[in-house]
Image (tube, rainbow, N blue to C red; front, top):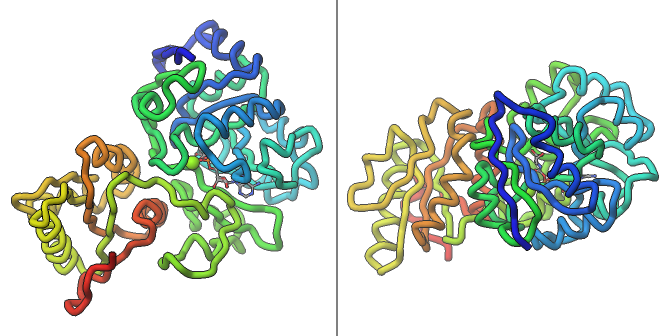
Length: 360
Ligand code: TXA
Ligand code: MG
């Protein structure tokens, strides 16, 4: 299949630019499009055949449900039932925006879209390209992140092309996305609102509206082999991963820099292509090594915006081993570290422990 590329200017959009993409979607084909979080791989959410195509194009396990994108809150009762008051409050505060809610699904939503679950994930994106595509198509658009399963999510059209060229009908190219991490997912089907995936909207933000909101324990996990089962099926898979083996060091920054440097030099001497994930403040501390900076340590939003692009950059370099610094875990930093630890397969080392030997 030829994958068409359509270049769009967010500040100058016309409905007719979306007609071809909308027609493809109505015919059950797939169109990738930018949202404010990451690029999505869109298909008609009420068409089981389109959902099947999404799973096939991504190579994604079909028990991992898709998020359904809407452009108007009128769609909520069409797609979900027994909608609690808390859902309307969240919608009022955070939509359109980087927030996804889990609710009980209505019967018109096929199980193929929800990975067999009786619940549905719904989001109203704020990116004008996403909003206009939904509106012009007249559909509810199921869209996972537009990456091949397991790879870092896509924050530029070129990332989508890299992973999905030849597998989907069209890519709408709106340049780089604004946020760079996937939406915050809030489950409203249990006793308390639970954040299943941290994002740009933080727990503190959610608690301003719903004071009893908590993290799903799986969000805070630090270990590879614990028994915590993630409530969002997708969060259990290895994810966001570069092809090389990523290890994250934590501890005080001096210890971290020393440990990263020591281990990276060791691997390089053994003949492996080795690289370092660092920050603007520390990038010059690794002489003789290949270093990529994700930005200033204090600028968590800047780090979020370029994290996935940087992880992909390691693949372009052919890095076999990557050693990375840890970052702050407050605010958006919580979401940054969540993605980074998953990318590392929870391979986290304590930088202060001199007796530690590197796990294989
Ligand atoms: O920012 C985003 O959310 C992006 C853009 C494109 O909107 N989409 C995205 O989709 O990240 P995806 O498929 O990569 O991640 C969706 C996550 C998965 O972890 C999935 O398991 C979870 O949402 N999810 C979807 N439906 C669910 C449900 N009914 N119950 C629990 N988790 C659900
Ligand atoms: Mg994804």
